[in-house]
Length: 88
Image 1 (cartoon, rainbow, N blue to C red):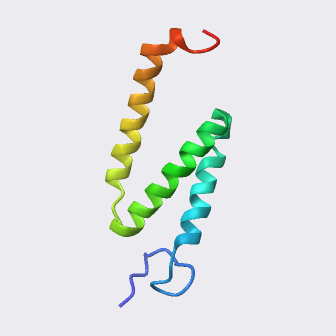
Image 2 (cartoon, rainbow, N blue to C red):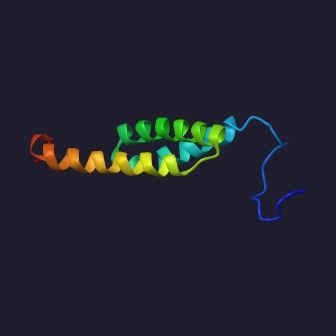
């Protein structure tokens, strides 16, 4: 019996979701363009990895923790090396 609370799925059940993952990763990269092309490329790659991980495991918390650790690492890295960055 189908769960009425489940979100509708595109395509037929079990179909390859690669196109959806690519579009989602492209969107993720696009809304990081304010960081420049490096931010776009890095977030595109991370979005592809996160999408593949979620599709295979159906688990979100490891991705939330990974995102948090990346943000903490970037923040600490900025604090430690901000004097060595261009424009400082």
